[in-house]
Image 1 (cartoon, one colour):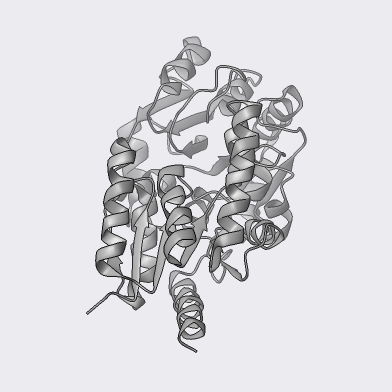
Image 2: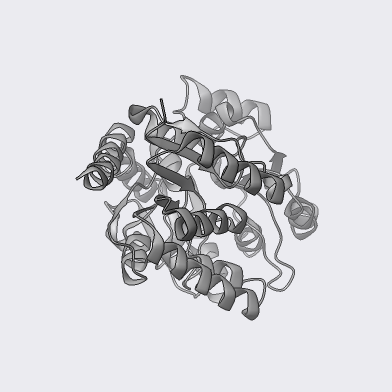
Length: 360
C-alpha cells in the first residue's frame, strides 16, 4: 500500500531537524526517507526514486536545502508531486550572509518553493507571513518544543562539576559555536566581550557548545578563561537541560535583520523550560512572546558596540530582586506556544486537510 505521507529532513537523519519532523508528524505515521547531507546529489536521486516507488500523496520536507527542494520542484513540475515545506529561516537573507549573489539566488529559490508547495509550516508566524506573501496557498506555524527538562538537583551538580560558586551570577548560552570571520563574531562572543567590560567578581559566563568559534572565544577571554569565562564544550543532548539549570539567565543573540528578526530560534523553548529569563535584541519575538522574562537590548546586532555595552550594564547591575522576578516570569512562560502536543495536533489537522482537499 502506498504511503500517504513521505517525510525527510534536508539536514540529514542525525540532525535535530529530523527528530523535530518525526515527532511533529508522528500522529500521521509517515513513511520516512533518510537524506544524506554529505552526499546531496546521491540523496536527491535516491529521493526521486523513493517518491516514484512509494507514490505518496504528499511529501513533507523539513529544511530548505537546495538538493532536496530542487528535487521536489522538478517532480512537482513533471509529475505533479505535492509537497509541504517546513522551515525555520528566511532562505534568501540567510544565504545572503555569505554573498549578495547567493542571497539573490536563494530568494528566487525560496519564492519558487513557496509558490509551488501545497502548504508551508513555519517555525514562527513571521515566516508563515513571508511564505504566504511568496505564494504559499496555506500555512501554519509550529515553533518547536524543549527536548528535555532539568533533572532534580541538576543546578547544584553541574555548578559543582564546572567549579561555579553557589552564589555566582551565571549568564550563558548553548549552541553551535561557528565563527563569522567577516563580522568577527560567533555565538557567545557578546557574553565574553560584555564580561570584560565589568568588574563584578561573582559574574560567570558559561558557553556550552563546540565548533570553530570556541577557540576564538578562548582567545577573547584571555586571562578570564577558566575563571569568569567557562567553555565546557559540547555536551550530549540529554544533558543540555541540566547545564541550563546551572545558569541564572540566558543570552539569545539575534540580529535585527531579515535573518534574526524572522526567528524564535530553537533554544528559546529550552531556556523557558529551564526557567531562564532571556537577554536579546529588540526583536519581534521579544515583544510578541514577552511575559516579563525578556531584557530587550539596543543595537542592530549582538556584535555591535551598543549591544555589548548594554549587556555589560545589565550584567554589572543585575540584582537578586529583579533576577527573581524575571525568573518567576520565565518559569510559567511559553507553555501554550511551545507545547508539543498542541503543535502535533495542529500539524496533523493541517496535513489531513491538504490530503482531503486532494481527494475531493
